Image (cartoon, rainbow, N blue to C red; front, side):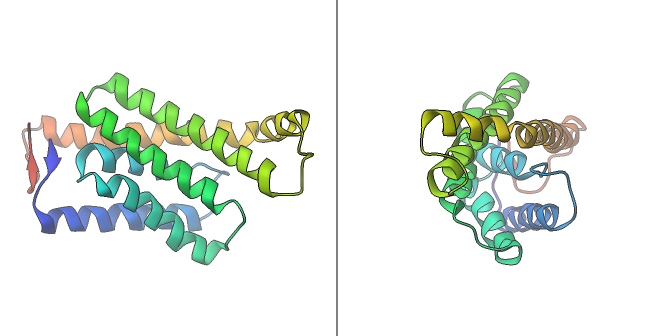
Length: 176
């Protein structure tokens, strides 16, 4: 099932982007935001381009307030790749695929962004030991992201499934 009508789709996209931006600007545990859930949901239920554009819009607009940083290609790229996981979920929608997408999104972000910190920041030596040290230092952030991703993904997909199970077909949604 995908969201079909342009007007409803636009409101949903804008709503998801606003939720994502606000979640990054208000106080929250490090890395515990709904960005992964939004990227997966967009890739699953919206036209494919929104799987990439919605998380990129969220990080671009919120980074304008939070500040630009040298790891932008890595953080933004990790969220774009996570959005592509939604395309995989869409093929055969199941709780297992949604869970796997959320876990993979967390792992992708951790691996890519910590590699980026190691590669472009002058914090760790440019050795395998330095890379390992960077990944170990990132574990507390990974724990927060993993918990946040699982909670937000369950909430977003769960609320949508609950609405659909009531037999209420939201305007603009078509089942396969």
